[in-house]
Image (tube, rainbow, N blue to C red; front, side):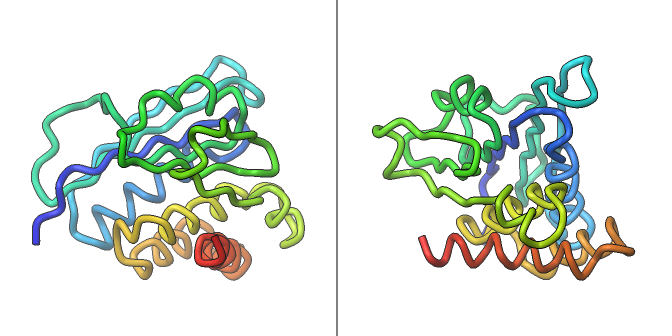
Length: 179
């Protein structure tokens, strides 16, 4: 079965690993899952604290658009990002948010999955793994590509910290299963 083009936006602020999460998803989709992917990114002039976003389109077919107009899934790690991009989500789309940092509007609750990603990452030993927790939650909510493809991308991207990051990924998946 062919996969229609699926658009994901990761958004938050600089220093949260937003761009890394998008890169990992695109890498896993293309190199390890054999799909087509297009990843674009945008970030503020500040290295930390400025707005940051990363769009990833994934499909079995060639991707012909550079820009995602409506989102299948929005993965947000800051209130500002949620407030700015929530209206771009398709009617049947989904929001995955770091409930340690983001408060969702009541009207979005039916399509939203809250994950305490920052809290989990801190408990696992590093706030810097919150993006991988969110990547695990994205997988748990969408099953967009094979879990092993994502795990391989994570192991190859973080060889010295692979075990901790894989645990973060698993915790993100578990959070969605509990939801």
